[in-house]
Length: 289
Image (tube, rainbow, N blue to C red):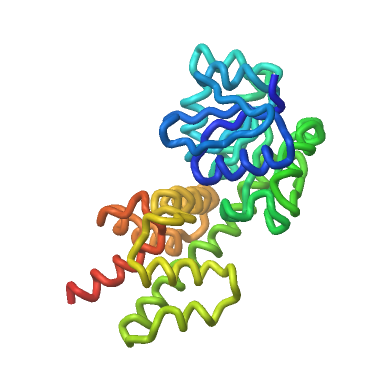
C-alpha cells in the first residue's frame, strides 16, 4: 500500500505529486485522462489503472480537480464510496465554506475523515520555501497527515477544526489576486496603447512577480505556454467568491464585474489559455468603438 493517492494530475496536482516524490513518499497516481498526465516517476510511485484501484491503494486520498461537485461526482459512485471508509480525504479544490461543510458531512457519513486544504501559491511554488498551505478539519486527521502535508511548502498552517476556515481565507486571498491580475492586464493595455514597451512595465516589479509573467505573455501573444492560471480556473474561483458573497449577503459588484470579463474571454476562445488573454477583451472593446 502506498502512503497517499493523488487524484487529478493537472498543473497543481502534478506539482503536489512531484513535491511528495522528491521527499521520498510512496504514491499512487490517477488521472481521468491518462494521456494528459505528465510523466512522474520515482521509487514507490505507481500508476493506478482505475479510480477504484487508486482509492484502494492508500489510506490518504488527495483530490486536486476542479470543484467540490466534481469530487463528489467522481467518488460517490457505488463502487468507490464504500472504499472511503477508514480513509482520509484531502480536498484541494477551490470552493466555499458551505461546500467544505457539505463535504465533511458526506465523508463522515461514509466513515472516513476529511481535511479541507487550500493551496495559496501557484504550482511552481509547491514544495518550495514560499509554498503555503492552509488546512482545516479534525485534529486527529491533521496529526496523521501532517508528515505528508509538510512536504508541500515551507508555510503549512493548521487553522483548527472549523472546516470552512481554509476556504474562507483562500477566497479572501484569491479576491486580492484576481483583482490584481485584472489591474495588471489593464495596465499592460494602457502601456501598449501608448507604445511603451511592456518589458519596461515588467521591470517595475521584482523578479518572480506575477506582473512579469503576464507582461511576457501579453507581449508575445502566446497564452498557451507556461500557463499559471487559466481562464477556466479564474472563472471557477471568482464564481466561488460570488457564491460566498451571495450566501452571506455581501455586495457582489466586484466579483460580478471580474466574472463578466473572464466569461467574455472564454467566449472569445481563451477558456483553457492563460488569464493574460484577458487583455484581448480590453483590446476588442477598443476596436469596437
